[in-house]
Length: 324
Image 1: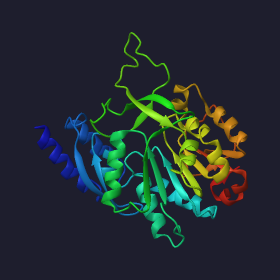
Image 2: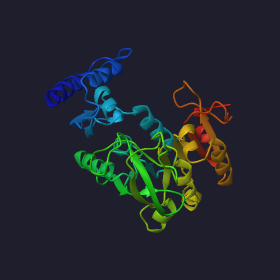
Image 3: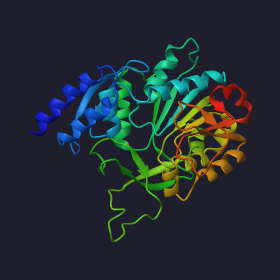
Image 4: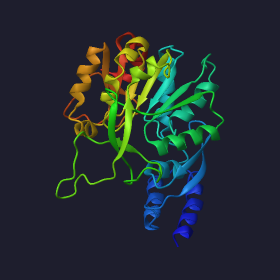
């Protein structure tokens, strides 16, 4: 029955991506997925995503973000377009560094769009993807191959942090190593299971390094224009491990910096404010309900997520996306 249900959903879900947009469309198909009792099933499917550029991916519908990509036919196309625009706005021909690349749903279309641009880089790669979860990295490399994109995308399989060492991660669905792909987060240092089982989860130990170590090892070349970072609360620790890289390259940084996830690691937006000042960057907070519009007025009480760190010398170039 499970195989029949999976086959039914992949057929219906594949059609969903081609249907005209309507209110609640994605929700209808997500509820269907749950009604078919498929949440615990690993369902691999080959798909073509069509926005903001056409590209091929292997998805596992066990992951919520991969399910969403499958039924909608795209994943955060507006984010990719925003990364491209801010890179072009600062007239920097450097590459995009995608930290927390997962299976490539941001990095691959970004690289393909840069390669098609009249302002394409004279050197390669266009995007460097860094992914800590071994199963995600394997899927990422497979997706790069599907798009014949080895020349324009470089993949580095490692975790990043403030200092080299070891951490534990948890993968969406509480997966063990080798069981599949999904979003992941670094567990707080010293997290243990309390009597109520609050922190009970599968912990996958990984080795982490730093951005600066990668730079000195020549894994990260010069001329980085933009960093996209999404590491579920570990974003600031990773940037602290790249002070020298940031000083030399001065990239625009766009990241989630989710308030709730930062709190897991005893940090807040005010720590991001302090860090930004220390490296001569401006910190802009994304305005809720607006598509990639920011303000330089930081409101710690209302802040939820999404920040852009802007080198002071580029503030005027990006005035189009910042409101007072």
